[in-house]
Length: 288
Image (cartoon, rainbow, N blue to C red; front, side, top):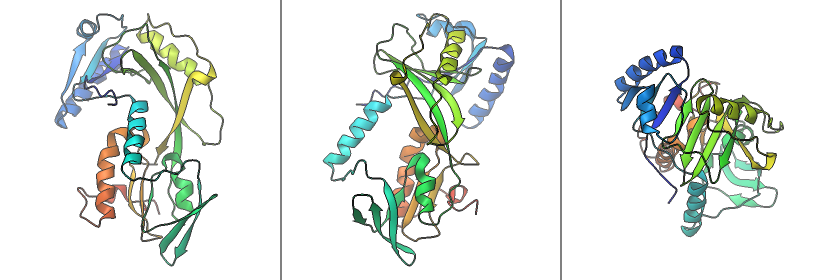
């Protein structure tokens, strides 16, 4: 159980200009086979009777779903532990032992692990790990922030992106609501700018005037890093510098959406099977 719900996803438009663009968005989405419709403001409000919404119109992506990431990760880790996967926390990789073009072992500060195959799937830290193997992986962290109301007094049925505010609002796991946003291209070593959260909450108030969410204390603000490639495509494939290393990183803001498909492709590569799709657009060395 990870609170998976298929309720669709709204994109709310605050201005007439953006609402007009929504019609073009629907046309493009439908041409790609997505179940998508444009909705006028009153039709949206009829689907959200418990909430006042300021908007000129919206696009509804009917096929979208959402879940509670905390539950997903907790249950996934428990499943892995119960199925023979050894997890080694707080053991950052410091290097690799190689024999020619093959990795023989992975070195950490505490230990050494023999390896037949290495998969680099370390998110925004993948560039640094790949560099230990003389593999260039152009990648920058994109920091985002979120605030979660654990027992929200505000009601929203469908997840929504507040387009002009560049904020996502997600009701989930019962009575929780999460507000998230920003794409801060930065370094993982640079301290977070908690003031960014004020901008997120101000944007929420413009679209949802009854959502009077106070600025939380720093301990209640979550932030994390999305691994962003220069062209927006992930890296999926084997490295050229060594023969037994696969990279799976650079999924930016849609890692959860692409995770299962990437896992299948990595499994096929690891087992030397024909991948389900052409991986050339995701080639690890495409910027060399």
